[in-house]
Image (cartoon, rainbow, N blue to C red; front, side, top):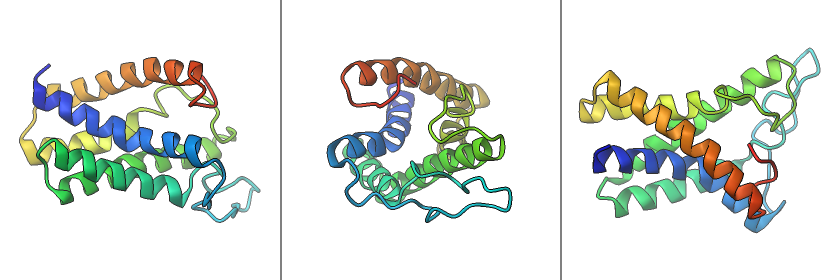
Length: 161
């Protein structure tokens, strides 16, 4: 894998990992649900309590900083974070419609949207190939599975997935 693809995967990892690390540091402080606890007609939450404004802000903040350190501009880091979080929210919304609990494991549904959306943007910005996009998504999925287990053992993640 080229250095530039590694940097792009790293940005997606940062965008998705920052909310977890900040939750571990701050606990429930400033943890306001994006959906404000609202439910749909069927009684299921729109997104669930684990999707917070703090998570969105921490994703944007840290992704922008890491993007800058890696030589990308502010807007690129911002868009990567927004797309990664949009994919994560899409997954959560879908899981609620499937009657899955917040934070319930849904292999691939949890990883593909949050890595594919930013990878497609990267494809446009850097003229990546479809093979590059698939590589970014697959590498993200593998790293996410491995890192999740490690972070769980370290007490940073609440679940090993």
